[in-house]
Image 1 (cartoon, protein in one colour):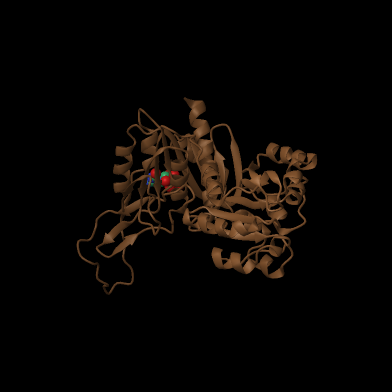
Image 2 (tube, rainbow, N blue to C red):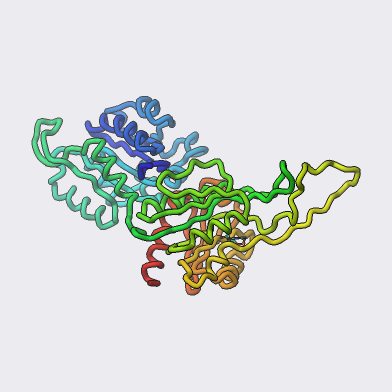
Length: 401
Ligand code: C5P
């Protein structure tokens, strides 16, 4: 799986002749596995039509900041949250100037101000404009702000000049974009992640389970792979595609997940329990389908499942152990109690009372809690959140050892 697999890339197109290459770039990004939505400035639409970009990307193209229809659906804040990366190609001198000054006078600059995702610019302009002191000062400001700059290349230009200012070719842009998602922060580490729900059978056709989609755990697996870890996914039943570069162990019940986790704990550096494990299972599995009788109610006796993450945290050679806490009230208090009770190194708490985040949704907002600190991470896509969490775990792991 390419490191752009499942990435959501917001491609900003500004008004330069190199905009014609952006159409090819959309295709190349999709070939590498990314979903692409396009935002165009008014000047960009003089060079290439929104219809072309819509046909290629498969999404409506966004062009206006104050568009009542767009605001109702995908306004600039939603687009800013959707993006794993804001990639602007071509980026003109004018756009760089506006971005460096923090302006928000069109849709694309507003998205850049609002987003928590990384931003990469692919400059394209006349060599004199590139060399101009104003552009170079703006470039310094953008680099200081940790905005990535791809290129420009040196060579012949559309205006006949020769010099720096040519936009990089789409394949070069894809290469640099992929590198942004590859950190190496967990190189040489073994990371084990549990994900999804478990199912506890009642009889041959019925089970107890929960609404977990597995999305958060799978996003963590992808981020761990990109961080260079030898990654093991222990997954309950989900609808999600299995990541190609991880060892995947499919389980159904909590007891199976427990056994697989203990086995994989050997040599494990970081254990992340993102699964929504059923706390109880029916004490006995009915060998035949239970029949509807005359009585108005029936009673199922349940027995407690092993606590997987607590068992891992109790091992003599304990990996850095991270648990999740889905709470509907007193989030930090309950999560901190879980941290202590289960002897965890870190708890990721999320508020399931807010129904646009968490269980079965694409976004999440969490609080990261350890013995000494409580840090909130605001709402963003699970992919983006996963990368930030993995970077945080890697840092804590490095400082612990
Ligand atoms: O105790 P509670 O279910 O609220 O704790 C949630 C955390 O514990 C999650 O990280 C979950 O994956 C883990 N857990 C577990 N085994 C269980 C129950 C929960 O690993 N049986």
